[in-house]
Every structure is written in C-alpha cells, then in structure tokens.
Image 1 (spheres, rainbow, N blue to C red):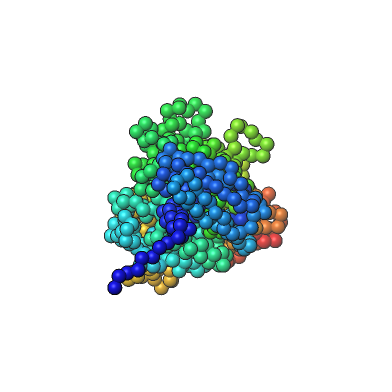
Image 2: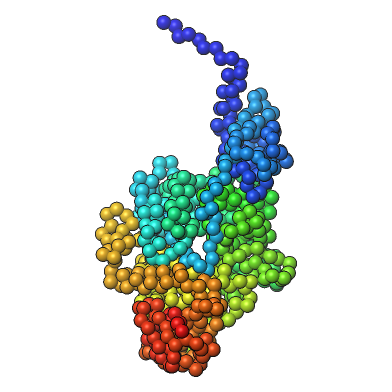
Length: 619
C-alpha cells in the first residue's frame, strides 16, 4: 500500500523552523527573575551566524536598550532594561534577518520569598572549607561521565577521586556537630578539562552556568544550599573571574578577539600580587601580573571588555538569586584588573546588602593585604576596592613562623603580636577571614611539626583572635601532609569513610584513631563554645607584649570577657594578676573552656605548658 503524503501548512512549516533554529541556540543566562535588585539584563545568544540577525521584543515593561554583535558572527548580546513592575512569566525574543525568524521563549521566574538565604557571613561564623572531590563520594554513579574528558582515578593523588555534592550532604551533621556554622566548597562549576590537566579542584571552569555533572546537577546544588540552611549552616560559593579553563566552550570560538589576553605577548603571570599596590611598579610587571595566564591551561580573561564584565557580574547575581548562597570567596582576587574587581564587589553588594564576599589576596605583608580591603570611612586614595573581607595570609604566616623559629625578642610567638599590632592598616580587621591552612598550603599539622599540642594551641588562637576563622577539612583530625612531598595531592587527602569500601570512617568516633578523636573532641569543644561567645563575636581585642614565650590577650564587651594565654614553654608558667589587672579587675574566677574546670584568678595563677588556655572570666 502506498504511504499517503502529508502536506504541512506554511504556518506549521514556519513554526517548525522557529523551533528547530531556536533549539540550536545557546542562551545565557538560561532564565532570569522578575523584580531583581537590578534592572539591567544582558542575554548572550550563541548560534551559527546569529550576529547577522536582530532581536525584536514587544513586551510591556521590557525595553530593548541595544544589541551587540561579537567579533565572531556566532554571538549576539541583547541588553534589556526590566521594569521593577514586570511580573514573572515568559516573553518572546524574535530574531529577524534571515529567511525565517527565530523565536526564543525567555522566562522571568518569580523570586523566592524565603528569607533564610543570602545571609552573608561574619565574625560570628566558623567556616569549614572542603574540596567536594576529596570529602565524600555520595553517588558513585557520577564518578565518570560518558562524554566528559576526565574519568575518576583514586590511585592518582592528583586525579579526580569521585567525591561530590551528595557526599557533602550526607555528612552535614558531622560538620554541624563539629561546631562549624558555614561551609565553603571549592568551585563546583563544570571543569571538563583533559585528564592530563586534572581539574578536580574546580578552578578551570568550562561552563559558568553549570555544576559539573561529576559533582551533581544545578538542582542538586540548590537543594544542598537549602539543606544547609535548614541545619543552620551557611554556604559560601567559590568563584573565579581571573581565568577559565582552556577547554571552555568559548575558547573554540571567542566572542571577541580581546575576550582573553594574548599569551604569546604576556606569557604567564608572575604570581606577585604585591605589584598592584606598588607605587613604583613598572608597566612590564603590571602587565605580567594582570595579563599573564595563571598557567597554560587557564586562559586569562580581559575584564576591560565591557560585554565580558557585564557577563561575569550578571553570572554572579544569577547564582546568588538562583541558589540562595550566603557568600562568595573570589579566587585570585589580586590578579584581574582592580577596577573591574571593585565594580564587581560594589554592584554585587548593592544588589544583596546582607551578602558578604571574601577575596583571595595572597600577598606578603599586612600593608599589601590591607590594600585590598574596602577603604576606611572618609579615606580617599583614589581607589576603593569595595571588598569587605580579605583572606588574611598574614595570620597564617605568623602561626607558621611563630611555631618554627627560635624563641627570642624578634621571633617565636612575637610573630603573632607583630601581625595583629598592624591592624590599624585594615578598614575592619574583624572582617578578615583568618586560617591556619587551606587547599593551596601544606597541612598545618605537618607545618607545626606534627605535634598535637602545637595544633591545639594554634587552633585555640584561630578561634579566639579577631576575624572570621576558616578551618580546612581534616584539621579537626590532625591530618598530616600526605605522600608526594608538598604537591597539591598531598594537601588534599580523602576523608576515610567517604568512599564505599573504605576500611574505616573518620565520620564516626569508632572509626577514628585515638589521636584523631583527641583532636576532634578539642576542636568541637572550642568551636561549639565559640558559637555563643559575644566577646569573641563582637568584642574588642587587647593584648600584652609577649614575654618569656607567653602571649596574653583579652576579648571583651561590656558584659563578657575572655582571657587567652598562649604558653609556648615546655613547663607550666605563672600568670601575674598585677600585670593584667586592667583587664582582670572585678573578676575572681574563670572557667577553662577546654576542660570546664574552674580557676581562681583573684591572685597569681598557673597555666599548663605548651597550651593555649581559654578562660571565660566570671565575677
């Protein structure tokens, strides 16, 4: 029997053409929200020869401001102004200029009314930093994804191991019980890099609107943020605007010729972030820092391109609104153009005033560090970063050197004093994120000679000095530096018990060694006490010059006072009440936070050797 011939009407043929062409387009952001705190919206359209077309929009409350074709004919950037009165719903973007039009149904979603999101973070918090790939493998089915370039290989210390968002979700109670109040994940954006590069860490994005499928999905990340909020944990998202991965889909077809810096001209960066604040810096050194590539696999973005700058800022706002995150840690903050980073910080915080941002400012001195924090009130030096918080590497350096130098007038514990005594240079040192180590540094336990008493001393200092403490996963267990000397893989060990078939689980007391349990108990005791300490959260700091390897400082408000004594000596030492009377007057007793014992401070008293004693003072 002969198959009947089906004739389609011209209207149906046009509709099919519209659908076929529209489905071949890439649209970013994939959707937006009505009543956003900004009225600007830039939509990037990517498709074959799309620059030959022009967008037409006819929707009340939406104004087409302009449209910009890329240097590549495959990009068109459509800039809109969205009225604050526009209601959620869809509107059509019609592209004309070919034989047939292209119609895109774009959606403005309704913003959530949940107030338990975008909360920011502060000195009330203790941040738990972890690498999802190395923390726990909650879904073995996504370890290796067909079509993605790098499979999982746990045998390779520098390879992808299979940890994921579900794995972190499975252990939120462990993180909360430890006394942490916020979780910082190293980047979870798609990093579809070659196996030779090994992008498990997430710092070489290949798509800035997608969660890497080996970590999970966009929805899983949103659900993770909500689950954290339900448990009273905040979430800090790691972002990178300095560079992308060389396998990013842009690199196959750059939107503009100046979208990335020319590596053949500028080579790789000098890694010397001090150059930006150097009044005598040469243009050569400035170009090397800002325009040089981080490494060969990380093309360096040129944020002077206004379309790129808008793209990156808008991507930030999209993730904040879409996921509900509470803060951002911006990687390599001192490497891009500082004018762009200032604009990014300013516009982000204007849109979300309760939000917070910390910028990675890995530089050598307090003066270089403080340059990157927002200006003090009334200060006008021609540049304001608008950045509330910096990563306080100076505290790390002070702890590292303080425990590893000869004791004396200019060394040892004096390093801590010297770092803090320069706090006048910061606009607000209480906003600094302080840490003992992180994913880029050798494990602090090994730096401190793998001595538990040293790690306890350093941890107690971290949680009682000024600032916002960040704890690197495994520190609570005394993780040492792993095999491989000081390479990245050695800094980023797996959490035993996070993978099916592991011989033990450090997430349970029975699976931990005696030393791990000892450290875990100490960390959780101090961290959970800190949650309710007004003196630590909001109090002033007053310290005394270290003397005979003993450093004493106080944190205090009008109604709460804490005394901290770091005794670096091999024997117990006597603390003079008379020397510290300006802070001890009116107080006769204290509780030792570590063991809940009572100490009489009405006269001189002793503190143990090799310990940081935290005393809650009482009348």
